Length: 361
Image (cartoon, rainbow, N blue to C red; front, top):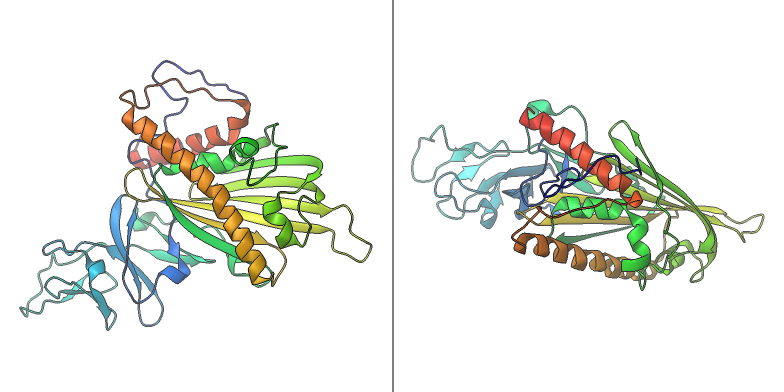
């Protein structure tokens, strides 16, 4: 997988990812929001290049509808939820969770075409997931995210909008060799010179790598109760069970632990991407530690450090996207792959298979 077996011809990517176009499969679960974002107050969000309104019914059930009234296209998200019906702010038409119009204030009859698209939602862990493809094609549940609400873990979650195609972010978080360069001042973890071993387990991309004893990134030392730059033994294991989410486990071994002290720890990151408007991505992230009840001040400090590092990714990825969009050559530019790009190339292969299946290719 790490060997470049495909040839690149002029004007072609190794495997085109269509990053200047709509390149997101529909028949899969994407993250719509953090659970706390969805309340009885309508939330407007662009998902897979469509305007969607999210809200909860009085019993807590989350709802997702197209955010355009079928009468004169006013955004339903500018209205209110009343008696479990979302009320259009323009002329007061009401719609139920199934998208069907239930009331037209100015007349008794309701046009049969007075409806909007509704989308299936599921909750997994701390996130709500949406299926925007064919509901008859639902054949699996969202990725299991139970650790994000497990009291045995100390969990940090965050969100940022990135003005870059989601594939750029997905490839970025699966290739950690950039950490020694782009994150030299934040992660301060400069031992990623060698690419990891990459394999496929079905459609799940897996990478694994062992490291000799070395200083642990100061971003995570406090959360583990270590002093800064503590020397530890570390194994990294990452996996992408869905194009929407990937995980990265930092398996940490305390070499100085006494006979009655804990020796092994896990820090788990999750990188969740959902296409938004064209050329923009919703990026939800998780940093978690398999130790409960970490002090709030430690978690806040850790989160601030993680955000600083991820802003470095965001800034560069946005510049890459802008450069490609402004350059009249677009994707018609040579692109090479390195040995460390095994996981990234696998992402493109998985994506191509899914898109081809949906498009009947």
